[in-house]
Amino acid sequence: MNYCAGLCPLHVAGIPGLAASFHTAVLNLIKANNADAATDSCCVPTQRHPLSLLYYDRDSNIVKTDIPDMIVDACGCT
Image (cartoon, rainbow, N blue to C red; front, side, top):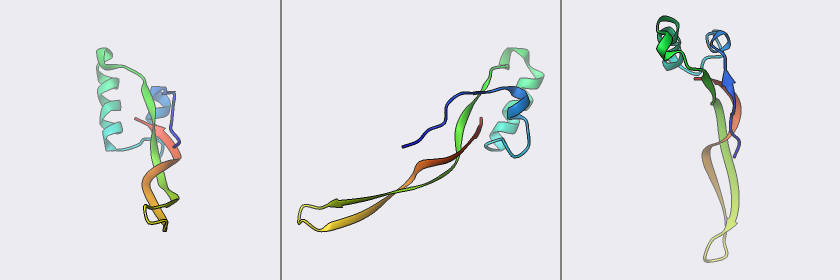
């Protein structure tokens, strides 16, 4: 439903707490040591929650379904 967009400059992507994962830290080390690999990081979801849906099934029963990780709550850098 929601998404993250935009670029994260290297100085922002490297701030502890803003990185999305250990993968982020490794990529930042590669970028810092190799000018050819120095591409900008991008925004990715770091926190999500489910989307609840109510609908009628074929037998006209009301059904509630939760679709996991559908709504983005927070963004971070790759």
